[in-house]
Image 1 (tube, rainbow, N blue to C red):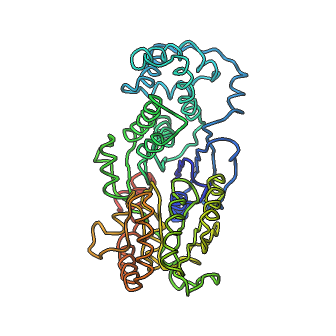
Image 2 (tube, rainbow, N blue to C red):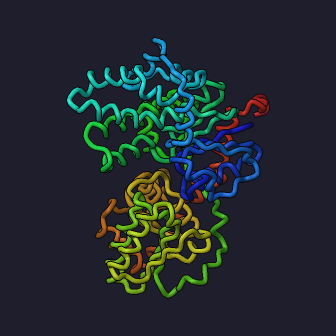
Length: 478
């Protein structure tokens, strides 16, 4: 079976939980051929892979949400276009967010060659924008509204203009733009469509937009609506939808996904990687070592972690923090973190960059995660596989991983509120001073991961899902 994995802003360009999951899935299902359809911001990321492609990956295609080179070529063609009534009504439904007619929109980009300039600057788009403005937003300045609508819809139009590879199954690792591509492929080729959400895409974008400073007022709501309508398309078109845990499933249903389509499929880790480890020689066992396996990016809130550690260090002098993950994904933020360490004058904070996690994790006394948004963090599961307790903020499935959802193994760490320097500090101090508690939490976490979150469990679950779409299987033998 040929499977097209559609990923947005992650694999194979950056490391992280979702990227690791995709890489593991491709390697796990080696009998299938995979095509990777990767959505990235622009051509500056072209071909800059941080993963070596497994042998069963036959192609990698890239889709750019900003693409001045391609748009320039489209502008040069300067082919005039005019939407017929059905096409115009579909465009109008998209802008007004009223029962969006996606099929005519798919057909516009599949069957016609035209200039993006002629579409976005043309009479049909102007007319639809003006209708939307008059019905919903007459209080704002029209020129600002027009240019904002153009900026919102250009990335979507670039995605709709993608030359899609053929596959038996499109497996989209998010809704959003990935879900649009998968929905369009299903419409075009009649293939299967599987949506797997690690975080709830719509909610994550909504949280980002609420905090964002580059967009204000009603334009926040317009952007949020845009992501919601794309997610609804994916939910409606999908044959199956997966979520990592029960609360995520509830959110999907709340956002409009039919309940009967959803299956909870927890993450799985290869627990064998964390057995019989040989700790890195740089780890001093006389210290109480705290391990954060994270990308140094704002969503991981490394600054709060650094501040909390600085206060904890005042109470536990032999505390040491290891921040293990890439620092080049957001260099500006990483430099701000380095500067904060210097400003606070705190010692024993090590930024390792990318590491082989098992080499370090076995030598840690606890793991820590201070993210402001997560799905079901692999770093907590990997820490459990090494018998280490976790400190984590109350985001995503962290509460379920620490306290348990369907087992009675007991607590496996400490949960804190996001951005709470005091709570995070207190958690580090408590575990540093109570070695017996660390050992108990570590044992509980190990039992939890072995019961539910191994790669063999994940393989069995997804094998049953993939088999639904595998036309080569004789169902009478199953």
